[in-house]
Amino acid sequence: MLYCLPIIQTARLTALHTARRYDTHTSTFVGIALALAWSTCELFILWPDFPVPAFVLNIFTRSVVLAVIGRVLVKLWREKEYARTDTLTGLANRLELLEKINIEQDRSKRTGRPYSLLFIDIDKFKDINDGHGHQSGDNALIVLADILKTNCRNVDIAARLGGDEFILLLPETDETSCKIMIERINIATEQAFDELPYPLSLSIGHTTLIGNTHDPAETIAIADKHMYMSKRTKY
Image 1 (tube, one colour):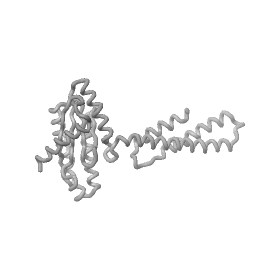
Image 2 (tube, one colour):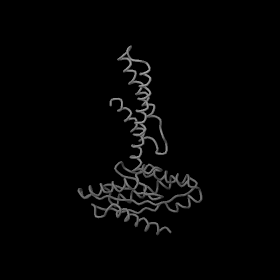
Image 3 (cartoon, one colour):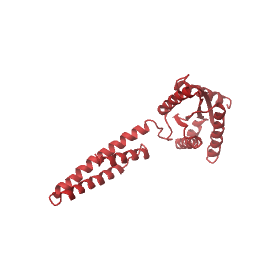
Image 4 (tube, rainbow, N blue to C red):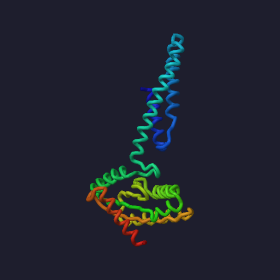
């Protein structure tokens, strides 16, 4: 068990710092090193009565077992991590967002403090994909995700629902602060995409609520409706 602890920790850190589509051999190398250390300690304790063939066999079998344990744990932790994370942008996904909204609604009900939700949609995103390619579209999503991360507080939750739709959950945020955040995001987006070969603008709807008068999906739908009202004023 003592020798398993380093491989468990290595697998955990590896899973958290590598993307889902990549594999890693770090846990394998650590497993081999641990097997070598384990068998060497055993050899010194029993020397000279410990047979060399048994020493070699122990290194091999322990390396295999520890490496397998490490790789299995990496996959398990990676799946757990990405089950709640959007793989392209690194933001929270719908599952994680719904859970966080539930938590924030309960807190708002206890404290009486408001929370806000921003529903963000990229205008004419299809034109970017059609005119510049899907790689440019993906790059636009990543840039926007970075803008949201940069302008968020630590307590805020930025999520991607799918496609070009994003959500910002803003705990303890009233309508006035919400509008300030919208303006900040629009300015940052305009500055970031001014240097790229394709312009990009956003339609943002918001809602500010107290307590859990709506379930999370209904709360998102309210902000979505306001986003479409904002989009209609542009076109």
